[in-house]
Length: 101
Length: 152
Image (cartoon, rainbow over all chains, first blue to last red; front, side, top):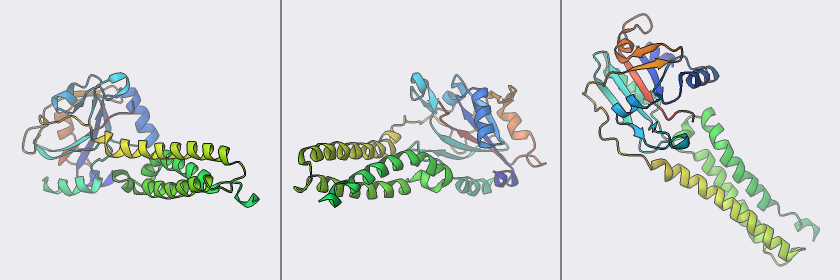
């Protein structure tokens, strides 16, 4: 995580979890980056990442995805996994972040 | 033959199967490299599978002290073991790929759709703000948005 900071990258985690749930997760795991709560999956829908009915009690949740956005707000790198157990690795993202100025 | 009474390969194989299944989650927390491809768990499953196979053969050997009971127990434990391995392989390699298409997701070169969401302190945070507030004392080079499934 410090490497992201050194690279000037701000990691943000987004899920349908409530702020309260995310706070607990952040405390337990020691994560210091920002967690945002998209309880109604509105932003997840806007990014076309809805995995309909895959959550608890058929709740719509997000499929795992990572987006690297430059300071002008343009998407510079995207990772949409085909297998939800497989996520982007930090090294991959740091490599991709080298194009940012 | 008392030495062949206890069918250790069967039971060790079965316990190892369960151990591999339940430790999968712990293993990838400690060793994130195993997350993408769970080779540690699969190695355990292979060893467990061999032991189960040996155990089943042993359980069906004619010199068991209680041939019928031995066959029943062996069959149940063997089938359960194979079932656990099957569930894991299915969940890892088949069910995990059942993801909806996501053709509308922002592409490289597109503008990221703006949003405002609540952080863990209850504050409203916009993408624009995240892109401008300093990181490490200077303007951020970028923001990494990580969408995840949540701990439901």
